[in-house]
Image (cartoon, rainbow over all chains, first blue to last red; front, top):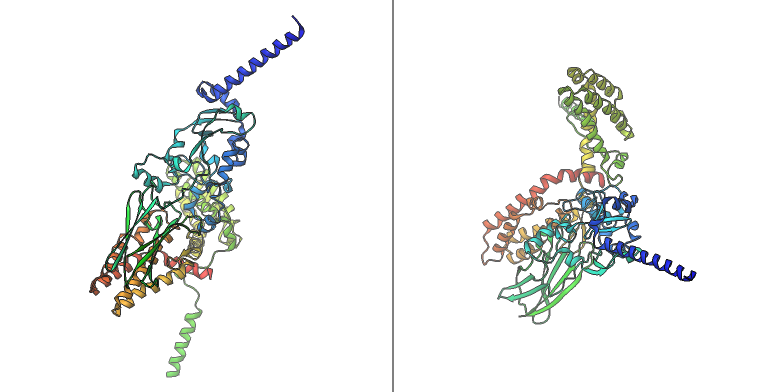
Amino acid sequence: MKKSSRIFDLLFGAGLIGVSAIALLYFLINERFEWIPEVALELARDPEILKRPPAKKCSECHDEIFEAWKKSRHSISWTSETFIEASEDRTKEKCLPCHIPQSVRGEKPSPRLDLRDEGIYCVSCHFIENKMHGPYDLLAPPHPTYRNPDYVRSDFCGSCHEKTLKEWKATRAEDTCQDCHMPRKRGRLTQKPGFNLLHKKRWVGDHRFLHGKITEKDVILETRWEEKFFNASLTNQTIPHFVPTADNGDPRLYLYIKFFNDKEEEVDRAKEIIAPQQETALPYKQTLNYRYRLFDPVAKAIIELKYQPAWSKEKTRIFTQTVSR
Amino acid sequence: MEHLRKLLITFALVLFIVSPLQAKDMVVKEPPKSLSKYYPPQSKQPKWIQQMHKLSTHFGGVFVNLKEKDFENVDKHADQLVEEYKKTSEMVPEWEEYFDIKAAEVFAAAAKTHDIAKAGKASGGLGKTCGKCHAENEVSVWAKFHWPSFHKIEVTDPISEKEMEFEDFMGSISSSFKGVTVNFGEGQYGRAAKALKIFKSRYMELKSTCSKCHATQDVKRFYVGPDADKAFAGLSEELNSEKPNPGKFWKNIGLLGKTGCKHCHLVHRTNAFIQEAWEH
């Protein structure tokens, strides 16, 4: 046999073994996590991960999730100006558990003392009892991840969003918090070269924790005239919790009504503040009615609905409607 | 005779004015600035009150264990009490003189005899040092560091939609309340009805204000709850009727005052007055 042919066979054999090893590893990591002995999982673990690292450390592998989280309100839960002002320079005890949670796991968390500027970060939600947890079982150096179905259930979010969870449960809606606020798309959990090839594509939740946009299809306005009164009603048609909703924040809908006479002169105005803290928010599929006495002759009303989130003083318009008599 | 009477009265007045404070008198003075570093935001945790709890636990631990005849733990608590007492005495320089290290050591030594009567007797000297500081400073410390400050609360006025200081907002509620009662008293029912809308809007804004500190709905409802809703509904009904009934009107006004205003003022005003004196 020629020498070159022997070298070729050797290389071919080595290549075959290498490819088989990678295929086996890919299969084990992605399909048969339970076959891997605990000892092997321990070997794969980087002890640094057990020291509750900052989010930047996680970004070394999970860059896309990190970048999404950075755009979220969760990432600035401790550093936002609105929070600092509302919490009297972060001194109010009631704010701390959810703005700097030690560990989120289905009940009100405890506040942590370290890395407070990270807000609600990777470790808060995924690091439980010295192990990484998530929606999938995975052997992925530098840390194995253990599957916990709670990550796709609303109860998990209810650790902090208690009131909203309660409102959502009462609707019996099928869509979970994650379905609307963490919509999933197919992608890889890691972007680190090499490691990314060992992960098959999975459904990955959007870690921007999206805030839905309220439209006139979501909140329906109806009106009715009487001789001395004007009646308006609002119905939360599509959003399976109160609108707006918050445990401690103060988001609001503002309903403005201006009344005009037949000369187009403004004769009166009214306003409603629709806010969870005032117990005036709109329950799912329910209608709230508002009644106004007309002191002067009125020919038409212009009605405007605006939304102001908890973290801003800015209002955005949802709709404007003119109703003639 | 008249001169003598005036002289005596003047003397009595001077004597009254210059008399030193009696034990029952209380001066609520602002705590020293150095204490701030043991409370948020300067400290991540309320370290001063935690330190007080440590002292209290070790002091109590001595007696609990003496009663249980667990002398090993009596000794531990006695030693830890002295250690923490010394540490506490160095935390706020302005309060150094309240502490008597010797009294703490005497108490620890008495505790270590394992004779509960001796420990009880020796606790008096140490207890006095705690009691003196508490009598002179406890109210101030609680007012300064444990009650959120009303003066830092900003309220969005629902009428103007402008941010206001809490005190100013309370002033505007009061004005709009008078808009209702004065107009009603004058028989201007239409004006009173318009004023009621403004007053109600501001009054209900207090629910948002309460939620800046109170986390539970029940607490808020104690101040602005079903009674207030009922009173407002009653007032609105009267003011929108052809002939408002003064009896029903004033009954509902009274209900608002008793259930909302009075509840909140009884709980919060004293502390707010103390804070106001320091912050203005």
